[in-house]
Length: 275
Ligand code: SAM
View 1 (cartoon, helix red, strand yellow):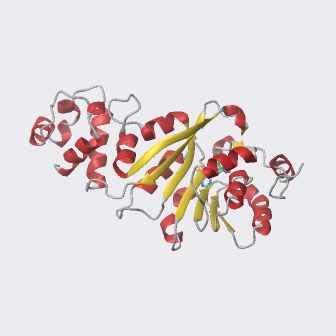
View 2 (cartoon, helix red, strand yellow):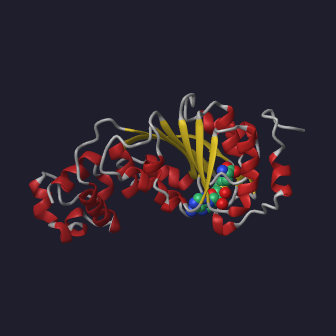
């Protein structure tokens, strides 16, 4: 049965183009177009938006983004086997899908961003997902070039992204995300929804940039969280010793006996600004 967008079912696309999933490329494909639409809808209205997608694969999520009215999709895919399948989608939606072959980690998304709203939507390859997210969170200028990130991760990563102080999942990623964004987990996706099924549950996380995050040098924040969470079971006077230990903590009025996971994002910024 043909899909609602008039393009062939994804199973046929995969078979015709010989896209057997490769583990090394984190390939777990979503073949249910209702589910890919649910992921894309999490990004809100796409009318008039340019959407960056990482790893379109056979194009299930790409098709949903286009069907929901994105003005343009710019997709970066590392596996050259997927490019002919994606070219069929480009033909179906003239001038609305640009596919770039290559590594998303080496792609300068900001340089490619046009005027107007930009959203990033992706079912990320598990092996590079966290690094891509961190890259999108680190620019000097804030707010960044993107208006929102709607990203599928392994659930454990999603929990680290949205974690706040006193949460077991709270760590460097939670501080970075909490500092610059408002983030929430939208919904879980079971392994059976993917072909082939991964070992663990996935989750869709939606992040929007905070307009006025606490002014703080990223490099200093990274130094503090790296040291503090590198020895998360230790008291801060011990874990932060290389950065000044007790005297640094006393300077900003933080009890040296506390542990990293009890500190709020604001307190981490305070420490970073006192280095
Ligand atoms: N978007 C498709 C879907 O939802 O069915 C595929 C998602 S699959 C989890 C991840 C995709 O990312 C694969 O198509 C894989 O080839 C691609 N990929 C892996 N590493 C990449 C990288 N460094 N840069 C760009 N694409 C990458």
